[in-house]
Each structure stands twice: as C-alpha cells, then as structure tokens.
Image 1: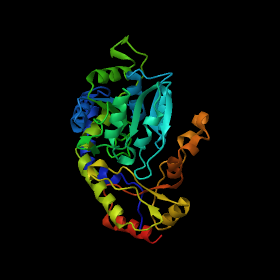
Image 2 (image 1 turned 90 degrees about the horizontal axis):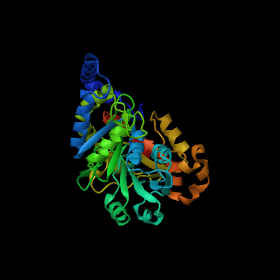
Image 3 (image 1 turned 90 degrees about the vertical axis):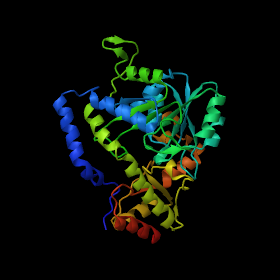
Image 4 (image 1 turned 60 degrees about the vertical axis):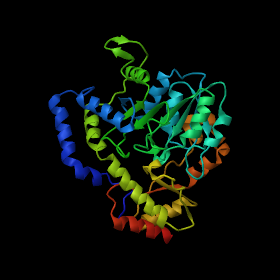
Length: 365
C-alpha cells in the first residue's frame, strides 16, 4: 500500500471551488498588494488567535526578523534560541546582527528545555525565542517567569503551530509577539510563500508593518531602513478560505496522532511524550526517534510508506555557521534528535487503511 508522507490534494480537492473563487475575486479586482483580502485575513487571523493585531509578511523567516528589528535588537545583543529548530529561526537573529545563544532540547518533547534557559542569560540577552516545534506548544509559564525576572521579550516561532494552545491561550498570544509561516505544507498553508506577525502590542504591529513596507508608514516617507515583505492578495485570499477549515484539519491530525500514540508498540521506536492536554499539539509533524534510522526509513519505503527527516544536521554544524562548528557536543539531546528523528506520515485525508498500515509495519519492524 502506498502512503505518501504528505498529500495536499486531500484537502485542496475538497475546497477547490472556493480556492478558484478566491483566485478570480482577486483577479477581477486587479489589486494585488495590500487589498481587501489582505485586510480580511489579518483581521480574521487576529480574531482566531485572540490577538489585537496581525501583520501579513512575505514568509515566516521575515516575520521573525521584523519582530527583532521592531524591538531594536541587533549588534551586541543576544537572543536565546532552541538548538533543535529549523535554521530560519537562527537566520532571523543573525540577519539583524544579533548573536544566537543555543539551549538544548528536552528529550521528552523535543522542544526547548525550559529548565536550561536561565543559565544562558547574560547582560546582553534581549529576548527568548520559543519554537513550538512540530506543532507542540512550549510550556510558557516557566519561560514567562524567567523573562519577567530579567525583563526579556518572549518571541514565539509559531511556524508549525497554527491553532495550538497552552492553558487555553493560542500560540500567537503566549508571548509578546509571534511569527507564523504559511508555507504550503503547514497546517494553515498558502499556495506559495506567506507569513504573519501576531501580537497584542498594536504599536509594535504598526512598526512591523512599516519595516516590511520599505520602512515607511506613508508612501515616500521612510522612517526606517526597512525591507519589502508583505502578504500578497492571492495568498491572503487562499488563506481566507483555508482558515475556515483549520480547526477541522487540526482535529483530524490529533485523531491520527492518538492512534499512533496508542497503537505503536515497537520498543525500537521512541515516541515523544503525549501532551497532557490534546489542544497543546496540532501535529504539524509526528516525529519519532530510531537508531540506525536509514535502515528504518528503507524498510518503510519497501512497504510503500514515505517518511521525512526534520532536521538531520544541527545548526551549529552547518557551513553557514562555521563559527559554531564543533559545538554540537554541548547539545547532546539536539544531536541525538538530529541523528535519529524520522517524521511519520500524518495529514488530513489519510485513510484508515493507510493509518493502520503505518502502525502495522512499524510494529513489525
């Protein structure tokens, strides 16, 4: 049986007529940047997150960078960041001239080890970036205590966690500002690159909008050395359609994840600890740890099951960050995750036969 790692046609086919209508609506208006669709999505996504403001951006990386710029974080400043994350989180920090300070992962959640944050804080620390990795909300209560103690900003990298909650509060409102990505494969994905910043600080939102609009609040009057990072109308229109289905799709992801949690019994496979409250996780990715993972991946491939890896090389071992090369030994949990992580197929529209086949094959490995 064939089980792709991800099949977006399963969701797109069911809403194709609505996506077509959204496309034609934008085309007929002939307004492609900063139009009605953009305004509608920003308003609706802010409401969805229970936030006061949402600012569309070109992508998720820009969303993080614009937050840092708006806070005035730059050269000489340090930003706490998980060692286990996609490189975009760190690129945003170094783009503004600041220094990333890595914190190892928690072996049970694969998220940042919140108990190790405080020991990394110095007089130069300006912010903590928490990444709700794989769709799992970080335990923000402890992070907030540390942040308040040292007067630090909490920035959420929510690129993989659309709709996740912690203690009834959605990602986007757990910190001071949050960055979202709407890359096509995300739980809420555009049909191209797109992103947004969500915050309850309306003054900050205005500053971020200006930074992303060439540093300008009004045309030809440039206050900041900004950039061009805006959400285009087509992507906003598609997101307006798909936002209506996000909770439904997240519920389906949780249902599949629960089957994996309860039915995968092979002791060779380490599953992350299931959250105490199911709403804490939206399962953008279902990661497991497996020794000799290439053998496991090939075994599943022979069974018709496709997998993925997030992420095989620690950031401090990437050529882009040669100044940190060799330091991964100081982040043993992250190093283990990079060496052993395998992402299992999980997406809305998987059939019961496909789900059961994944479970059966893994248990027989």
